[in-house]
Image (cartoon, rainbow, N blue to C red):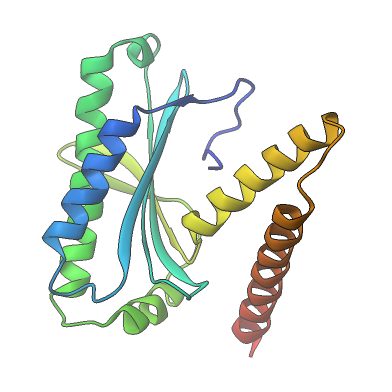
Length: 192
């Protein structure tokens, strides 16, 4: 996931149990309105920023609805797990509030995807409970992007071995090619 601020060191991953819990809560909360679509969540922690993303994706659909949230962290706060957890919970509340408002209009997944097109896909400031957050909405399909990242890491690892997995590589390359073609088509559609 790309951070809002320029970072020089790699991110620290947020515990997977926390992210699984967030995804499960969103899927349960919006079970009646999300249809076949599923929520996933991701978060990264830097020394001066925490970034989270909640995405709604539908199987077989490249487009998704993703809400990214970022918060500046004061020095040494990144080392305080309890305070970072509180910040992440606030970010989850913001995402839940946005999806709740969007679904309260009895919006289908496709309508929600189209609605996100109306927003400018850049960071915007948001004050929530007297704290400054940054929010960005877009069509990033974090499920596909994460799969692509994992594939590239595996391919890189396979190149160092003498016996690469050709069938997996071909399948993943086809997925990446399809993703690239669909993103290109989205950009063309935006221009028209």
